[in-house]
Image (cartoon, rainbow, N blue to C red; front, side):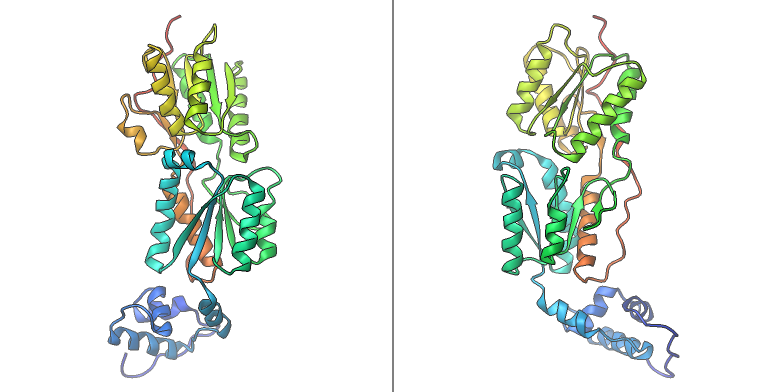
Length: 349
């Protein structure tokens, strides 16, 4: 910038105002003042002059916070190693998170734990050793102790789930979490199905309870009841065992709804090995809308809950809580049914 300087604006200047005046991103402003990144010298000078014009400078507390960061965030998952490796849900989630972290020089520390006690002890250790700047919490449960624990430890966190306000940490997820299940039941009923069973996840998970409640309520509104409900640990073995049991019933279901796509894939394979055709003899619905559902034959009908977008929004929210200057993440959509080839009219028997 050259010539006459601009008049300082009333009120406290912000990094966004500096970025706008210099025609750059807020990240570039941070790089200019931290002497990091690969800014052209002309760009750096333009940013510094814009900041001078506006009377803006990084606060001492913000500078101190930046210098104390590890630039690492934690993702702790309560799953057995074999279940995590076989479930692409977490690959999609991590892809969304890393898409926001990597460009900003942050890393992701992944830990697998057996139960909530082990997870809580891990957070205590990570905080004491100052190994991470914050954590993404998964698998919300009733009476979940983790948000209060992370607050006590002074470790910023976000919780993945339905966007319901909590007193301790922000919750990131699509709104109206029951909408997808409601659509599934209505769609199957339109196809003539009245014997619909649900293969759910662990009963203590909040999303399991919410989706099961919507499943039962939507059926009840039509004068129906679930053909059966089976809870699993999301593993392949549990999905196969539940499917075999349901298909062996005297009046077997004509449609099976699974809590995730991985179990639905197991369900299709189990049905086909039993000599059933999908969807002519049995309709199958998953939940997640993972890429593997498009690779099957028949392709999987499922519920899209935008796993990558939720992961990205969680990362942005957590980065902001860690002191990064980022706009609030917005997730305005809800889970939606994606109809493909694994569902069809109820068989006449």
